[in-house]
Length: 288
Image (cartoon, rainbow, N blue to C red; front, side, top):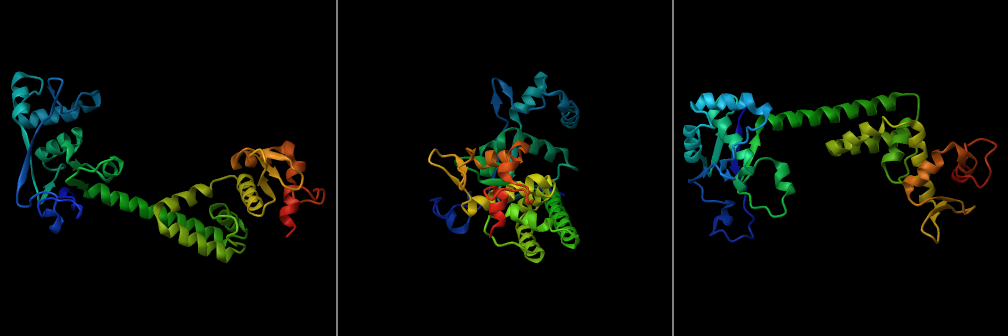
């Protein structure tokens, strides 16, 4: 598969001599040539690490020069990369010249006007890019990976639904806000299925959640519900307290969770058994 270089559609609010009316950033039917930038008196071609030796040897053999030699420096000083404004296709796996040009573009950060991937576009404060490289092979691999993650999450969700436990409800309560009203396996399945299908990040989050320890999950859900119902609230000093007793639980939700996980605090948290005091967290949650 190839790597393509295409114009990035222009912002229609920009004044680009009318190009913006047709979605162009630069004039179509033309081309631009780039020389290799020089930094501190040396051509910026990378290939300085030991791991780059094989690639460097391959390029030198292809061009018939040693880059560090006088002839090699002359070659690098006059070499130009030419790109078409309409579309440029590179095949780095079969064409070493294409591989060389792509290498130079990437090493030199797209020569200032070529976005080498989507992440670069999202990271810059001011977007001055006119072109974008798209690696079809990497794009396909990324799509397949995302699909596999979503399918894996869906399979796990189905497994939980068919099990004899209500863990699926616990996972739903952990992921969604307190007060979502999720109390049955059917509703939990429906909400989680929508959540997973929405995007890959959600599917990944679900797969991470199902790996968490049950005790931690139950405690987080318990704390979320208690805060939602006012059983736990923020006191005058900004710390979370158990409303009925005034017991200080922590300065943040995470500290409250750790407090509840501490075996030393079992009398305050409760276990759901007959020995729980009416003021324990669990007793108050069970008192609906």
